[in-house]
Length: 164
Image (cartoon, rainbow, N blue to C red):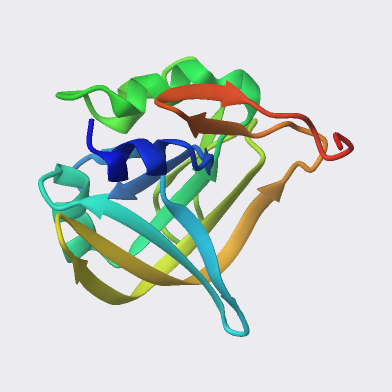
């Protein structure tokens, strides 16, 4: 492991599932870089590896959904991170979810928050692509739930909102 990789592994990131509908199927993936970049206008950013099918789809489809997972959703994170995974509908079988009204993408329920977005800028960044997107709507916010984070190569729960 390079020093850079080791250094970045020590930075906790919220575990998020990004989904998109390509009119034939639903595709999704677990991402470790999803963040707010502006409050006015409301913009978010997701970073995806250039080699993935989800990246290919987001280059063609502007609207997508992001579900920030809660501590109890480690299995969902793992399913969406597995190489060669099936479509998102199969991965969410038996898991509460709904189709976003504004994006048409699947939204995982039971997480910390979920939103729908529309890409406004695509920025090549080395072996990744950054998607900056305008927030179309917030599907839900559950501040009482503890988020799931990735730290040092593992999914870990963190304390709830009242943890100091």
